View 1: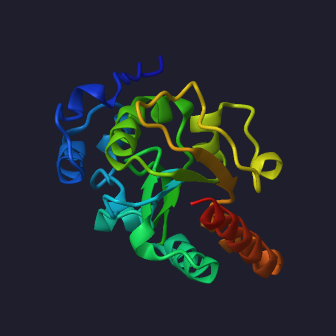
View 2: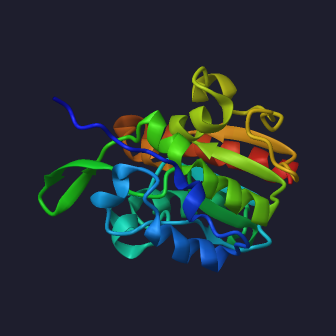
Length: 216
């Protein structure tokens, strides 16, 4: 008989009067879903409190889980390069993920292998993302990959169909001060997986970020 998984959601752990520092502290106590059991720590977003642009990915990776910061692994380095090539200064950006704990399946060598979060994990973690966006009030949000896109735009979202378009903020994700727009591109990890097409995948990511910069 399979174990019944409890996912009460993160709402009970979000501080009543949060700031970014309090969120980073409070997420360490989160028991909104079972992912906390196998993760080293919760990983909230990082960047300027005045950021115009939020870059929204899937979840922390192995390196992020160890260091407690988002986008510090190989995909993060790709994103750093792409932002620089797109002319977007780091001070204008806040990076975060829809899921705040690392989900992994097996260990290969010394590295834990990423496993995509279930939609139940995304739903449970939503209060953390809502709290970040309410504090930041960004002009725009760039969705990095399918999990982030599904979280905001629904299960029919496909990066290939939505990238390059300036989309309205979804009514299913209400905020008092909603971003003016949302856009989609691939996750930088997809560039690393592109192999022979890596240059083309990287250039497409830069083009999407340049477009987002033009809308700020």
